[in-house]
Length: 439
Image 1 (cartoon, rainbow, N blue to C red):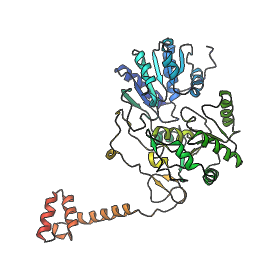
Image 2: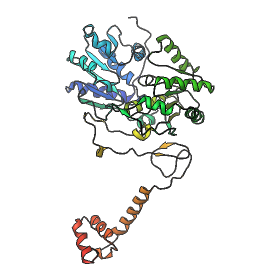
Image 3: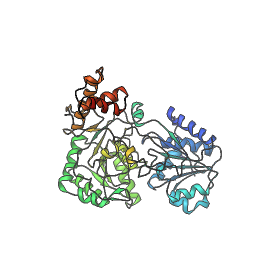
């Protein structure tokens, strides 16, 4: 294969650290580590460096992807990085698993490693047990919340989204969630919302008009619009065009040549809105795409992260805008919410799950970390009933904490609180209450 011009790409310090941790894991006997790095953190550069070191030493590399749209992009990245493409193949997993006899890899790299539990991936891993393996993903979890421990044996955690924003490796963002329809009652099939029901719910002229209105108000810049079905996506593209905003729809059945023309027109700025279902999610990079429009409700944290953060690729002075019309943020939190990853295949019990602490401004629909005032428009929040209750309980605790003896308590509730603050058993409060004939 003819090599193209090699571009000198310098690794960031955190990327070097990740590669060192990977090499250490292999030396320690881990067979299939998984690198965890947020969308836009440079996973393809890390993969390029690992692949280049392998091919430079004469080893064959198998790079696995699950969509053909990603093959050309990865091949171009590897070629520019200097990977010997005579010794490296970028393969759709379906092709690799059907014809494994074509390969003898020393290294297997799994792109979007959260797909690794599928039987086709398992087949490849079992056929080449002596090969070094590594997975790359932003979200090492299943749809139901469990980890990837059936395949991976170690997680190598890179910087968080917040850290990458601070380092100017991801763009800062604004998140808005103006609700257009109640998606909470949609049927759930195999762990995901019914796309057909979502389409029916959102397929209304008023909703189309509101989507366009909020886009014009909150962004007006180049955007990727994620829809529930292909029909829904085509309709949204038609509605944007009717409003004078150049838009196109693409899906897996769009002819390859035509799909390439549409994506290039989007990159060039001749198309302002690119509508799709799940096609433009993983591994698709357009640096100056500033906006994500979410019209596809999902229970998948992976899909939410991939779609909401597609507009957060870094450029100087860029500020990303995420417009979530289907409440995904209330299910998954903000893109920069800190998350604890685990290899445990079992999802946490409901009692162990925590509600993501966010607030949504009723005036401008801005979503942010808890605060007394909306940082976007200055709206002052009124305390909720629960917050008022917590304030009263905290105030009462401060008062009772100043009591020197149980005789200062004025009711049974204060006695029990006094006992708790002093580390006494509840029976102490009960006995004191009986003495004062309150029980």
